[in-house]
Length: 341
Length: 279
Image (cartoon, rainbow over all chains, first blue to last red; front, side, top):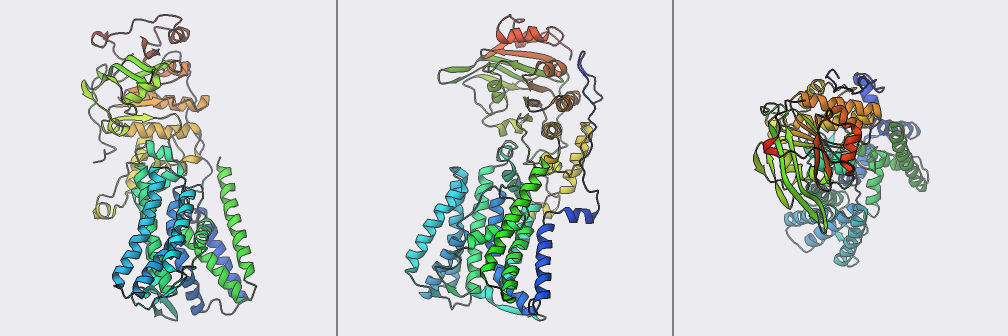
């Protein structure tokens, strides 16, 4: 506006633009429109229902148990969130963690150095993350196919190493995340602290650093991300590799929770982590969502399982309710996206 | 080092040649996309590049923004030969490009989009050690730049997907304008937009030119070209078929140059270009 138009030019309408309806300033308004608010309300609603319908739900010991039960999937879901934010998906996270536990479990069973076994477990899981990252970012293979194939490979390797057996882990270091200390009436495990620490760390990376913005931008519009000069390939590679490391830590937490490396453990962890991410409000199409939503989503599933068990309802209903939640979450995401068009 | 948003190189006086392409040739197998094509962009002008499909205008632009490496010919920036291996090379030398297909991240807010790929870190140990972003500074800078460009937007915090198409393209154009230090290349910036929205983007182009950055505008849309450009370069069969101004020729004459139905003014040799003061 305001500049002289060339002769004969039609003066376009001034650029007065009516702002789209947007809640003004206020912290409360912003809080209510935050994407994690829906999942949080659902979580609190479930907690309210179960604390009214059962006597034991709110007992400190039970709440601690709920969190302990969600530590493994909660950690795998961090990696899953990062990958889904880039518009990818990871079907191999649970399998990767199980392979980690088997390798470490077998090594300590053979009296190998526990520190080296732990490190090897972390390095191995990171390596599989790196492999997925290379296939996705260098060959541009679809993440679904890459991780589906890797899941098959990893599961086969796991079975070959395990030879049908499980490995009880008596080592203090490998089962350390399961150790607890008391805070008032509640017992807190080191595993919980590790998980919450990882949430804070990855939240920081995703929201307070350029790397995190690039992750979101790649999921939003990969071509645009490339055009503005974001190194898309190396960002994707770093996401998958870092996710692999998180799966390794998840394997450690799994050994802390149940000190027995079982090749048949965590069979559904991949889908459970996707469930947590989706219920937490992160879009499967990438580019939108929040990590805290994933934590809430993990807790929703854990609270639901725990509460339904406490009320004495047949466990078969747990999966049904979880299924309804997943579909509702995705439906909400779709509806809100359509309204923004 | 990332270029700072405020850092602007002193711009050369109006009329001096900023970017020059000499006898650029590019072949794809048996197809010659560019056949000794020339281009000359002067300080303070909007140079429109028009041409039929396949006339070589996109290839020429890709050469200028580093996306295509020419087989022969020379590109000179401020009189010095440059060799772009990638768009990043061109960007490092202050050439920004706006693409027609709205290169924005829709779910992210305007300030984030403006600084995407060039985020500012906090100027403290939090920034250098923990890579902590300075969101407040980016927001402030974004708001100031948008004000200077006279491009009004609902709020610098709103997600780009809540904007109209014209406003979205405005964000992409503004990003180029903020970071370009030598010139801005726009590839069909109004192709996806309606009439009113195109008007907003054309205004933005004028503002950028009036602030001193020359603009190369590729467009199919003759009314837009005539509305905003100072000079028009007509591409045909891979080279410059005519060089004119909106005052010298009518739209239909320019279309005739494009199709070859009429011969344009003989392409002016760069070193004997007539002294033309702006418009």
